[in-house]
Amino acid sequence: MHIAFLAHADNIHAGRWADFLVSRGHKLTLLCDPPVHSPPRGVRLIHPEMRLVTKVLAFRLFPKPYGNNFYKRFPYRRELNRLKPDLVHGFEALGYGYALAHAGPFPKVLTPFGNDILHDPKKSRIARFLVTTALKKADIITTNYLELAETLTRIYGTPQSKIRPFSWGVDCNIFKPGYREETRRLRSELDIPTDARVILSNRVMKPYWGIETIARALPAVFREIPGAFAVFLRGTGDPSYEEKIRNILGKEKALERVRFVDRFLSPLEMAHYLNLAECFVSCPRTDLLSISLLEGMACGCVPVTSKLESYKKRITHGENGLFFRGGDPDELAEQLVKILRHPEWISSFREKNVRLIGEKDDWNKNALILESIYKDLVKKSGYPGSGER
Image (cartoon, rainbow, N blue to C red; front, side, top):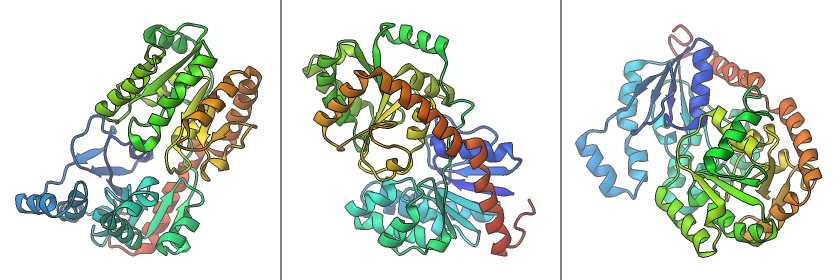
């Protein structure tokens, strides 16, 4: 098939699906807004350009980023009409869903990421309009959040018959325990003592992901656990926000035991960092069955997370991870101290989680489900030429 993605080329999830589909012999064209730092290999990359008049309207009539989200449907549709793919798949309902909805006669798949449907539409009527239109016009909605069907039906009136949720999983050939030599090297590079207990923040350095909660919890942890260090991964986050986090830690005299990683990490490098740490923290306001969560668990890194319904599908408090009230740094500190004081828990949780993810969330098995969704949709669509390229 010739598949067109509407997605940012630096998004790790879209990139992973692109790599998989190319490896399966499909032709893939990725349409996205610039800039791009690390596009997937083997993919044709196109940046559809708005005409000047459209661009002026976009940024004068709408608050950022909604003007771009609304008006880019015009250049994206022009490119898709020229390309004539068998199927169009939009990733992230707010950023690319409205362009997908107006993509033309092609079969359409939409993948929401979480905050685009659970958070942004609550804050903005424009966002709700864009997302509602995207959900309505998509032929199939798929995500790794297994309870998405009920959520979308209750909030947006989406028919459950068009929703295909399944666990994407993680590559268990990469995300696994081990990497002893690599973690020794990381300790040396980061100037972390060989016997230090490491806490990892592996979510994007932006306010939405609860990074400030983690920063405010750490001073209490450091007082109780003298050998504890923390590592923050910036990812695609904001350097100015990172500076705010540094200031919070600096005022509490905790900065010297925190390390910041400001570069993009490959999947293998991410696995190294997850093996470096004994536990990781994930505390966004809302989330799906996060790939970041599954990656950490597959590596044997203990999850300490906010108590979200989606996380309960893989974590049972006190059995293979720990929960705390999201936004509560005192309770987070309490749970981090608890896990670091019980190395026997860490060993037990690690063993359970590695086995659990291997059984339920192995990417090498689960990824084939998306390909079957594509094939069924293309076959049923009746779109001229579907499946011929």
